[in-house]
Every structure is written in C-alpha cells, then in structure tokens.
Length: 337
Image (cartoon, rainbow, N blue to C red):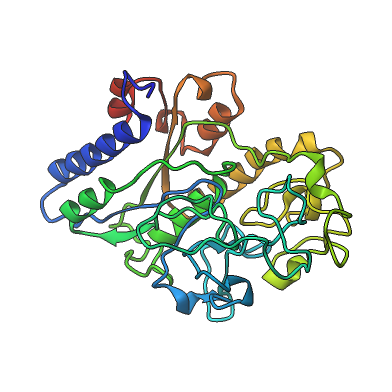
C-alpha cells in the first residue's frame, strides 16, 4: 500500500474505470468505443472457454486438476505475432514437473511425467501458486472487447493482485494486440482502417525478471528413478532439451529461457537473462506499433523510476515520449490515465 496509502491494485482499478468514463464522455457523436483488459505476470490467461484455439487442454499432466486457462507462447517467429490459423493453435500452459528435490517449487514424482503434489483447480480461487501443471498461471482471465462499459468496469472491480513468480511484459503486450486485431481467438475488434483507432495502455510496477532458483533444485540425484529430462518440443516450444540436471530458471510462456534458450539469445551467463527480457519487450512493442496500434505506457512506483531498466523499456515501448508516464502516487496514476 504505497500509492498515497492505498494498494496499487485499488488505485489501478479506479484509474482504469476513470479512463473508461473519460473516454466515453469525450467521444465524438457517433463513435463506437470498445474496452477490454489483459491481466498478466509472466503469462496470460485467455479463459477456459477458448479451448478450440488451444492444444493439449486434456494433457495427461492435468490428472487430478484441470486446465486453468493460461497458454504458452508459440515458437519464434510467431511468439509475438497476432497471426492465427487452425494450424497455429496455442499450447495449453503446463508447468512441467521439476526434480523431486525439496528445494524445487513444483516438485516431480521421480518419473519426468508426474508431480509430487497436484492442487485442484478451484473455480473462484485466484491463487496462482498451486502445485502441478497450473503453477504460476494467472487466474484472472483477459476480457474480450466490449461496448458495454458498465460491465467492463464491474469486471475490473473483481481483479485482485496475487503473488506470482516473475514478471515478463511481452505476453501482456502480445495478447493485448491480439485483443485489438479482428483475428481469433478474440474476433471482436474492427479491421484496421482510417476510421478506427486502436489504443493499448501498458502498465507495470516493477522490473522484469525470471529469477534464478537455488542450485539444489537442479540436482539430478535426489529421488529420481530416471534421469531428469525436459523436451520443449513436447509443448510446441523452441530451444534445446534440459537434462540430466534440472532447470536453473523458472518456467514461463516461452519455456526455460536460460536452460533451453528458446528465443535464440545465446546466453553465456545467467546475468544476461533479465536484461534480455527488455530486448524481448521492445521487439514486441515495435511489432505492435507496426500494426498501427498506439501504445501508452505507465511505470508505477519509485522502483520503476528514472535510471531503472523498466523505466527505459516502457519509455521505448510507448509510441513516443509523450505517450509515456511515471507515477509514484495515486494522483500521478489517475492523472496519467
């Protein structure tokens, strides 16, 4: 609670609702406004009703639970594109079992194909830290575009800030762009034309990070009946296989960034991983701006201020310097919106 004594999520929700009201009141006569939103941490939940666009929602690793709605990003070069065809489905997000070492956050059962613990997917529960395939999946789904401003504002009121491991901007930007294009799985947007304005507002309160786990988790000897193995191609991901030692970084929508290098960045040190997320975000924003989508960006809190990497990244992601804002209190955030 550092936004003039209020929690950031509460100030954000009020600012977002104010933005809807301001845009509605200022719209020229005859305008048709549509609003939507995309909650994200390091991944995005597209909603469990969109199974026709997703592969492996009934994968064997969901035994004891069910797909919660998050997806993995497609392999490059389609990881940042809005393109879709029946042959370009998204893969259901499955956080794979790690080794059975007690130091791991999502322990395996020693077989490479099962978990030491699986928590059920409980409807209405927003906790992302549930053991099993849905571990670290954002539980608030994105909201498709709607002209019903009051309903969208009511749904914004239901959003909560839950603890998640790691933050990556690119999936949030990518899915917001997919929301703003007329392609599946969210075909509610109008085609690009001179009479259509598409605006994306991106906000985050901290730096991007995938975080490195303790070295004990990539131990290959503790409790495994078979050598550890992770093959990214099983989940339609790019990159090299991991094994016989366990992963050293957290699993995300692109896979294990450091261990598998699915984006082909050629890491020589783990210290290069977090900075590469800025490179990923900027390439995503450049692609989205190239589509004709206008981007506003807002850096929230002192920890996202001048001199930080997230400040520079958000400024570079915006359509121009006048589209970038830094807010450290409630008045600043609401003014930016």
